[in-house]
Length: 565
Image (cartoon, rainbow, N blue to C red):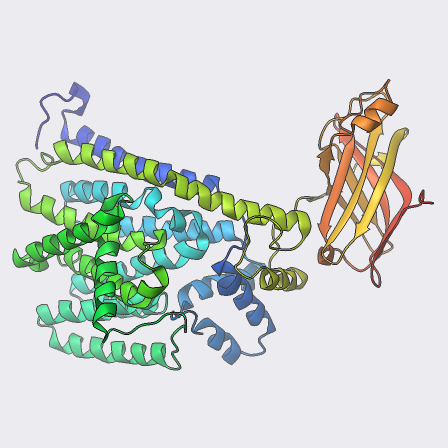
């Protein structure tokens, strides 16, 4: 065992050292996942409207299994995202809805599963520690903010990496069962994102190198069938101009490919990206020339898959991206770098001193991780601000496009689609006023109130006023609204509103915070004639009064103020 002469005594045993290094490797994992979960919201945003909501709406309207199968394998923006659609469909079939927080958690678990799979099959404890450290610090940091914070990205971009790795691990096992497992995961990877198809080429190289000719024949046959299914009825997005025969276009593709490869280590420095991409390819070639294909039957092929996948991304997205490396693609480059760095470590370590190289590697990894988090913190925060601003304005106004940012590039489309899925009950965007239940509520002995306005618009219902108990200090969040009809009763929270005018008139009471505003998207309320009531919950007591005001949602919908002239 390698010993660090300046380590404290409690780290001078191999078991303690391994435990300490494992904890260090997990620190960026825990930090990144906590950051991602802290900003998670059940909000449909940009691609999720089409890939999830529209898909579930079509699934809901489907009449037979052929329609369902067609929707699951349907082409979308040059991908067939069968695996993620199957997850959405399972959520819909078992719960009747979909939750984007849950989907985001599942997406992030895919990248955790990838690291767990690779570390498990790394072999010795020392190898597992070395690989775990590199994977932890390169894959878990805010360069990947789009994947970690957005289920619409992570569910595919993290999932395809795990599926490709599982396929390569299956082949590397060298058994018939492993080969069959590899076929299954290669098929699933192909129908997760288009670059999942690259695993068929990598797998063929692995089988040919191992001279497993019979399995290679079966692999190529199944791969060809998968390709035929994938490309059946395939159409390019008209916005993606691809012309690899034109020398200038070919040059832009190669430049963008090198930028994609180098971006994870460039830390936002665009000019450095292509040079780092060249360095990555040089290190990969060096490892190959030194027999890494034999020594590392999982690590080297998986790094080749990541490099090849980024080439496919470059071919398909060079014109669309205009040279910009999107956060969602960083996972492929970061994985390639992590595996290449690991290969370099394996060349330099000795069995007698398995942890010696970590003396300089761990500080560098920590420095890189902290720097990456600092450099991309603004990007991550900006993404959250854009999403939350768009969602908050939608909740307040009942339609997209009112605020500075939008839920979708086409706000009219977003508004119509969300309304359809909410009316069908498949999914509901967050609501400002939540439904509550007060089974112990009793009629109020003394409750002062006034309803100022009842507004019924095409998108939104708004009711404003104030309510308070005599002799009791008003506090924000105490006022609830009751909607009671012959068919149902619903109780909702309201938004607190300061009412200095009420406090001025009732100067002997402390009712400045007695104001309320109720907001509800119109299509979330049934077509019933509601009597409006007010409930105050404070000091563990719920008291209510039913007013003479009405909200009539039958027909065109109208609010009736009993005290109006």
